[in-house]
Length: 265
Ligand SMILES: C[S@@+](CC[C@H](N)C(=O)[O-])C[C@H]1O[C@@H](n2cnc3c(N)ncnc32)[C@H](O)[C@@H]1O
Image 1 (cartoon, rainbow, N blue to C red):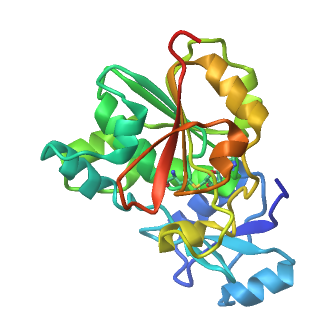
Image 2: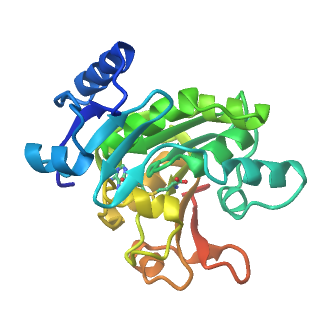
C-alpha cells in the first residue's frame, strides 16, 4: 500500500488541551504536528505537500482531504443489532454462522461496522479482532470504538470489545497458528467506486485498495476453525478467482457472501 502524506493540526478554535491531544496523535502516528494559524486545510496541505490532515476538534478527530472528511461513526451497526434482537436475519452473521463464544478475525476493519455486529453476536465470551492496514483509519476507528457515545447498551459494549490491530492482513495471517480463530472475514474495497455507501466512499482516500489474493484465502482456510467469508458484489468474478463456490445472501441483495467451510479440511 502506498504511504500517504499527512500531518496533524487542530480546529480554528485552538485550546491548549486540543494542541496537547494533537501532538499526542502526531506522535502515535509518527508524523508532524502543525499549528493551524487560521489557515484552511487545503492551504495547509498544499503548503506541507501532504494529501490531507488529521484535524483535532473538541468533539471529533477526523481526516480531511480533497476527497472529503473521514471520521469514525458506528454507521448502521446499531440498526443491524436491533434487527438481530428482533429475531431478524443478518446476512453477514448467517454467512459467518457465529454464536456466543466464537472468535472472529475481521481482516478488513474499515469503519468497523461489520466487526461491531459480529462482536454483539459473539458476546462477552467471544472475541473480535479487526485488522486495518491504513494507520490513519486504524487510529481513528480504534479511538472511535473506545469513546464514541451510543445510547444502546448492547451496541456500546459490542463497540468497546472490538480489538483493533494496525497491520496488513497478509503479514498478520502468516503469524497465526491453525485454529486461532473460528471465522476469518474479508470485505475488501470494491473495484467499482461509487457502488458503496457514502461512509465507505469517504474512507476511499485512505484505504488500501489492493484486491485479495488467492494465497491469503488459502492461508485463512488453514487458520480458521469454521469458516472463511468474503463479502463482494453479487455476480463478482472475484468469488471464482478466489476459490469460493458457495455463495450466501439475500435473494435480491446487491452484496453477497462467499463461504468456505473449513471443518474437516
Ligand atoms: C470496504 S472496507 C471494510 C468495511 C468494513 N467491513 C466495515 O464494516 O466498515 C475495506 C477496508 O480494508 C482495509 N484493507 C484493505 N486491504 C487490507 C489489508 N491487506 N490488510 C488490512 N486491511 C486492509 C482498507 O484499508 C479498508 O479500510
